[in-house]
Image (tube, rainbow, N blue to C red; front, side):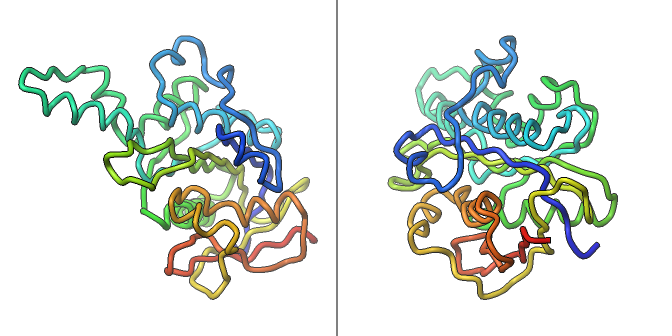
Length: 249
């Protein structure tokens, strides 16, 4: 496989001030994206992921139940984890089994499979500041080996301030529907993620360093604008991950 096709994307940014600055459409959390039976026990992280994933599948015209999925998040269910840690620090702290159940990295992936009645494989990963880049590389590897199509979701809720003040905000999620090779109706071609010298835009660097999910902004910007082919950075970190992207052919 020498390239993959971008069939659709979705973005969820609960911070209204951030949404106004983005060069592409983004939504607040869409509560209807989560079935009512799961909504009351789902975290902000899961709601972000569902909102972006549903929008991407809708734009691509694909059924969520038909797609393997990759869910990528630096911190996962960090607010729930923080609640558990604070409870354990109390002399008579009691850990809620439900909270423990909802604290694992693959919570959003699991709920997505249940809600969409999807029996396709789903995985969850984290890779610090390179989380978006590694998720796209994982997508490339899966499509190169198995072909077909898949859903990639990269998300993070706002982190609890005591863990790392100044980091982990604003909350953000994006989702891509990708296919192996050339597919009719694609928005763009994306090449294999690799190391390179593509510069991350200075206007977004500080935000992406605080919230690594925002490393997807250059790719989303080019997908929305349909600009000329170029290498887009996939991380604001010094690792230099990039991918060649082309909206013209």
